[in-house]
Length: 156
Image 1 (cartoon, rainbow, N blue to C red):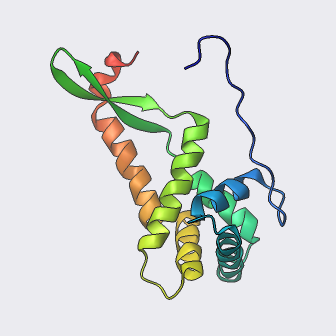
Image 2 (cartoon, rainbow, N blue to C red):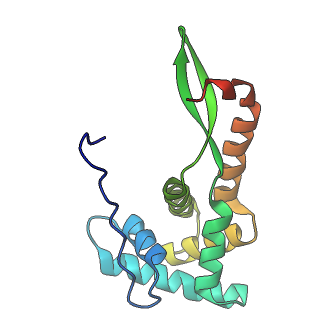
């Protein structure tokens, strides 16, 4: 944390096809070893597949899926008097989006479909329908926070 002044957050530039900074952030997280064109191709093809299967606009399906996966609460470890407690805290908006993107990408990489485009489209569609592994992860995180709400008074 800087002592003198607050550092301004840089906004991600909008992507070429949809003009959405969320899409740019997703592509940046999807990208491996600096291969942006490959990541863009995978993402845009996944949205086309999701659009065919879902019947709505691919971008609308994607945005709804990301907002469905965003967690509201999470637990943080807090050490108090020799004991470590899992303290539930609210998640900041930037972190909510980052976690949702990370979970969607991680669980789509674990899927056993033919190509990465199909895996990503499948996970996005599952999250859009409030199903899938990313939604299960969100429910687990919320369940953990709910189970430990007795330690909420340790939040500071």
